[in-house]
Image 1 (cartoon, rainbow, N blue to C red):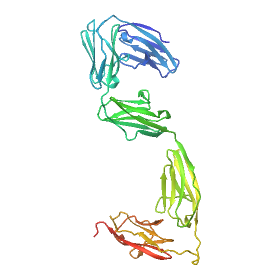
Image 2: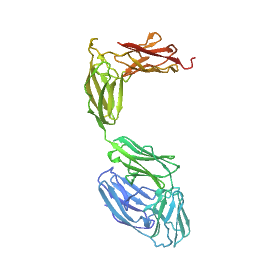
Image 3: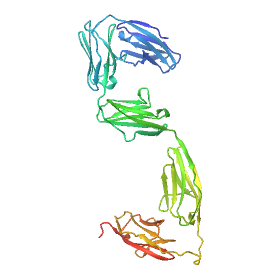
Image 4: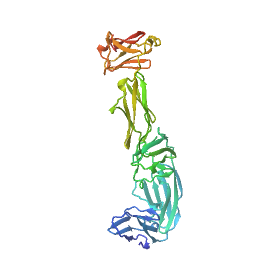
Length: 466
């Protein structure tokens, strides 16, 4: 247990406490504020014994001292007897704008003494270059060269058994804060979160609040604040649900806010499954699922367990949590079992459905309705392309049971990696993946049905060729 101590000015005192375990986490406090080791105050531990020593004690050191370790604590008082020195002029309250110089000045009844300067009950570290202390016989000054917002507080000067106190109020400058493009950030729990604000000046002191309470970076080890010229960045190395909040950045007299959302990871879940499909040959078909999950799952499609890739024959569509496999034109060989697999880092979900392709029966000419010949609604147009670049011809043809063929000169174009032909409703398209000199010339689209044939032609030229 700690014991009360009495001391004279300039004595050295030592508080000592013994514990029953080595390697514990502990703190020393004065009047409820943690004490940090300095040249004058030494915190030491040796095996089970912990000590706090203070050299050159002064009247301002008097107060309650406490040793805490976990939930255990012990406290004692220090009483300092000091000679009576009167303040003939006390320090006064100051109100300044950020970055100005603050000067506290007092006058005492005895010459050439060494007063102690304190802020919010704690001795000032006068080794900081911003602090300048001057003594001129009876007059003593404390000057803060460039005042920061964090300098605001109660200042005290102790001379013998007398204390003079005054407040420093710091008003912020009119710093412009650029509003971020995204005022809401969403991360998964355990991920890193970064919040950034930019200001219009270098060397600006900023403050961060979480739900209106200032963040103490010395206590919050996961929180880190760095300034890179005009950029002010708050990083949370590993987020918890409790970190979801409104964060406020303060610079000068201005402030701006951002909201942080912390989502809980969820494995994929298919809330609407694929449905079996049965369509006529030559028609399009769609398989649709609705998928949820955090983070958003990736979706993969397969046919009879063989992975599908998007191309001229099938398209992968995505709108919100709805995913669709679109088969542009199906034939009997497309009949199969189709599968959708949704994956994220936390699980997998699947959905399957069969496709049945119906082949129309041949109808006798006597009973069939008359068929009209095809009609070109919009013909293909001349086009040009750079060598090695893609080119495309497109036209619209109306008609029943129309078969489309493409020709380069007199030679029919066959489907390949270089030539891709597609037809959807009345739209017909020929895509050339890479154009070379031998691909120049006239291209013709021919549409046929039992009632007739129609065609349209256009030319392809290489850029820079006459």
